[in-house]
Image (tube, helix red, strand yellow):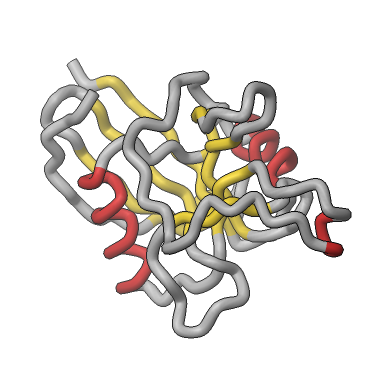
Length: 163
């Protein structure tokens, strides 16, 4: 489902995940706050950290969501890769672990996903989605599949339904 979005930035400090956040207000009944972590965790721990803070690992469901978050990250100097909640563990198809819904909108970097089987991931492949690439300069904008046990920063979200 695609939503009309009104984008409003508001910066706060959220101690539970030690992060800066911004709000993405949606005129069609959703208010999403994205929290950018300052610590690094593997994908599984990122999922748990967001949950323990009363949130979920971020799901990017539209180009508007992507563009708004991309603009915020760039304008505020955030660099490196960030875990999102998408994975293809289980049946090989990408889905948002936070909601269980299929990944419909995507913004893969060129030649991604590649499921690279490298020594650093013990030749097991890559099953989790990161925003950007953690070790690239200049920083690309888009998604990359990565081994889920790698430790990088992550983005949580909290969603309020507005009535």
